[in-house]
Image (tube, rainbow, N blue to C red; front, side, top):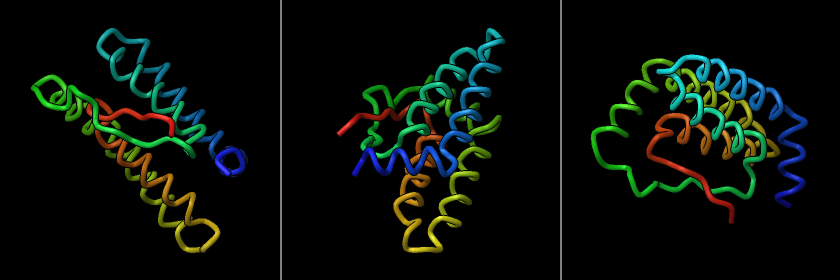
Length: 124
């Protein structure tokens, strides 16, 4: 079922999300200051391409000043819009019963896009 969900996800718009994340990550990596953010966005693109079968977990370095600072900068300069995009898409997909699994994946991606420096994903 994970394979079928991922294939449908990719065909029905996952490719656009992947492209958006990859282009944003590459653009951020062009600057020295943006490299850590670009790496996180590229990691997000891997989850955004095939979200079924992955779960979001908090990393061991969730406390401290640096992850907090990086998440705040990320939130101000792009994370809020990315998370808001996923929330809007979750509402759109959640209107129909068939779209509920996709809405759930967008909510998962919204939580990851909101604070990427204190979360990671793992396959299950």
